[in-house]
Image (cartoon, rainbow, N blue to C red; front, top):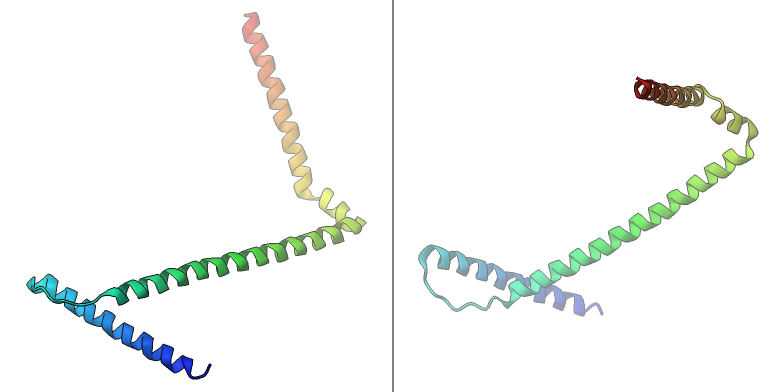
Length: 126
């Protein structure tokens, strides 16, 4: 297996050099319009390698996101279980200043709705 890696590296270096030659030939073609015969199949090779890398990166990113989501879900469940067992914490969360304000807001909305109904009823009687 150790013999293969230098061969692969040599193959990729040669393909990269041919791709650079293709880029140079395209530049000459676009500047001068001269026609030259260059094999640009290595450009397709590197495009395919790039596509494989993109797909692999997306798959790895999705795996990391899923793993983190599961970890976060587990952690949230543990915290909620701890809160569920702690009566003082439940009492603190259910009877804080924010809870009182929220209840008062609900009462104010109910009063506003009844007031609007009363005003509508008065307008209908006139």
